[in-house]
Length: 383
Image (cartoon, rainbow, N blue to C red; front, side, top):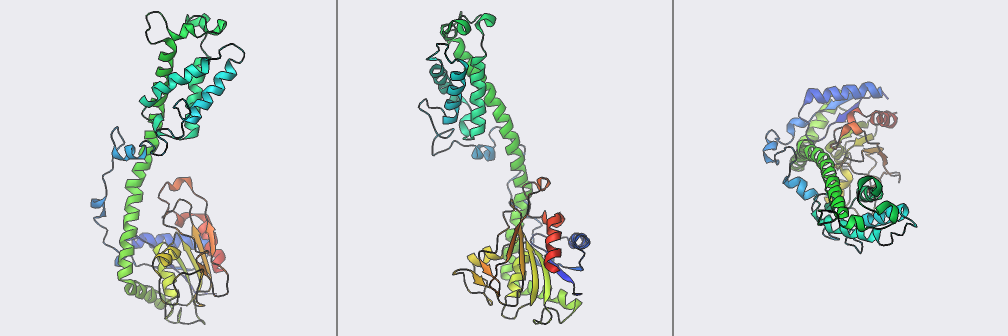
C-alpha cells in the first residue's frame, strides 16, 4: 500500500514545526510515509492559562498542599489501624516481636508492655509518623525503637542492671532523671525518627507537588480547553483534517475502495473515531490511537453519527476497519477501548498497555512520541 498515513495530534499542541518534527522522527522509526495533520491553531486560546493555576513553590511547613496530602486519616485516626496500646498495629506488633526475641527467657516479662506504653504516650506528638498508614514505614520505625532498647548494655552505660540482671529498674529512673531513662531514650529516638520521616516525605511530596503544578495542571487545563473548543467547533476541525487528506489525494477516505490510514494522539483519536463513524464517514482501514479518550467520551456523551448510545459493546460501522489503542499506565487521559466497542466483524479493538518509562515523570500524556513500542505498534498495524 503506497498511500501515506496521516497523523493527527492531540490537545495543547500549538507548535506546528515541533509537531512536524515529531512526526518526521516517528516516520523514520516506523519506516512509513507519515503526513502531519495540524489543527492546533483552531484549539483553545491557552496563552494565559497559567494565570488560573495555583502558584508553585518549594514545600515548607504550613504548605497547604503538603498539609492536605498528609492530614490525619479520619477512618481509623492518625496512623491507621490501632492496637490495644493505642499505637498503629504495625508498630505494636513489631516492637513486641523484636523485644520478645531479644529477651526470650531473660525474665523481662513486663518489658515489651512497658515499652509499648511509653511509645504510645509519645506517638501523638509526632508530626509525620502519626499521619501515615504506610506499613513498611511504621514497621521500620518500630524496629528502630525496639533495637535501641535491645542494644542497651548496663555494664557499659551505667544504667544499672538491665542487661545482666533481667530488671527494668535501672531504666525506669536514674540519678537526677525524674522521667526515667527508658522514657527519655524512647521519646528522643522517636523524635529523631519522626524528623527523618518528615524530611523524606516532604522531599517526595515536594517533587510531586512541583510536577503536578508545573506539568500536570497546565496539561490537564489545556486538555479541558481544547475539549471545550472541539465540542463547539467540531465541524471546523473535521474540515481541516479532510482538507489535509484531500491535498494528498481527494479520493482518500471518500469510500470503501480508498480508505485512509490514521495515527492519532489524545483528542486526535476522538476526532478520528468521530470522523470514521459519522453519517458521512471518513473511511478508515487502520487506526492507531495512543493516550486517547473515544471510549470515555462515548460513555459520557454519545458521539452520534452511526454510533448508538452504550447499552453493551457498541458495534462500529464498516467505515472503521481496524483499531489499535495504546495507553501508558500513568496517563490519566488515556482510556481503553476494547470493552466499549466492537469492530464490524465482531472483534474488539486491540488495547495495548505500554510500560512506564521512569524518565517520563508524572505527566506521561506527551511521552508516547518517543517510545519505541509506539513506533512498533504503528508499523505492525499499518503493515
